[in-house]
Length: 150
Image: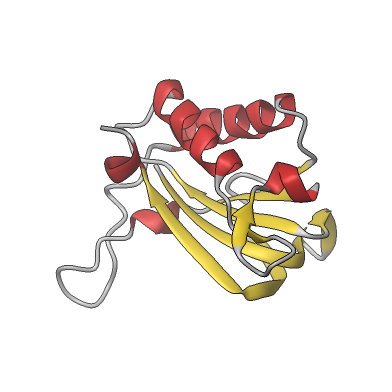
């Protein structure tokens, strides 16, 4: 599982010209799922995500978590995080999880983050989405379960 996490002032997602999700201050998280992923891996990634101290404290140091600042989540499914560009110029996506598994884990993540008391907006799995954001920093982090879950 891979996350690209962007700290944002605001972000939103539209499908077919309709706004389906938006947040203010918080984290925009692009989620990629592989066929090796399961709920146990998702749980560890969610735990890391929700506890990351990447928001500024009163002294301007990144000491606060999203819970500490009352931030929101916008979760977007993005299978292209598993693009394999080693051969040729056209990426291969064979490392990305099959749609049924990926959607199940995506929906699971949204529900579990919500159960932790966070406000969670999300995109539409498999849809052509337009994502807009105002990056705060900019501050972008990549989490990969191959490094987080051992």
